[in-house]
Length: 182
Image (tube, rainbow, N blue to C red; front, side, top):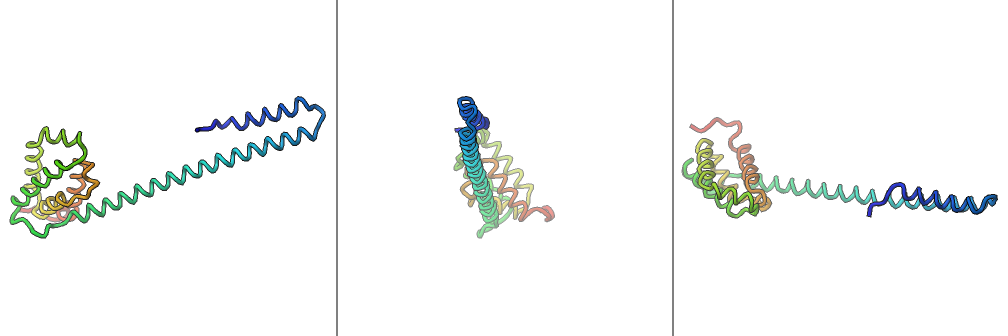
């Protein structure tokens, strides 16, 4: 439960007033009441500081866990983005493998809304993937087919974003900086 910052101060003033008003002229009782009020405020401040420190530690822990998960996913994507052991015979065969792997990836994806939209335009999506693939490199297509077949589990929650992350990994490894295939 969130505490009002002014609540401890209000309690102190009430305690101080209740101690001062009835005991006008008695200095020792007033001093003891004031000391107790300050002690109470000090304890409240310490509790609030401890709660804030706990909250900040929990946030830091969650951030570190999220960063570790992202690093692990990036490593898994990098591992999946490799050439298959059984290379396709040519670019057309590689692109057919890409199309089959792409459809299987989307069929097994857990992002139901995105997959539903994708399947509403399945033939268009597969045709677009085939056309892009045929314009790319043989190695890039072979990598993407293999990456889609061996996609890390967290990507099955991301639908299109998952495919794009695999495409980017294959492009970095096998396409960028290389001349386009004839």
